[in-house]
Image (cartoon, rainbow, N blue to C red; front, side, top):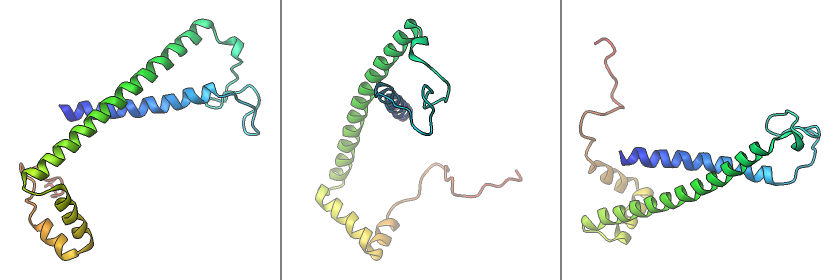
Length: 142
């Protein structure tokens, strides 16, 4: 369940960053470019003179920008907390096995460089439990 929450948070964060990029582009002064005729929206290609946008829609867009910025900050903080928790749990897992972080890092670096060490290390990792092996072919005739 916590993974789903984190995945949702990451998705929302990505969406808000994308929206904030749109907001930043909307705040920058625009000038006509050869590919977009004067007065056309760069995203839709439809003419949108600023005087035709009703005040209530501008108010709504401003409120949305403010809310998206707040969401972005909230999720950034949440992702930082999750990253810190993940780091803490990883460090705990290392020390619970009787290794220092330096020893563990050194072993992994050696395994990356030395195929014999890598093979020995991988041979010591047990296969996944529970029959959820997605790499095994399934019998389609059942």
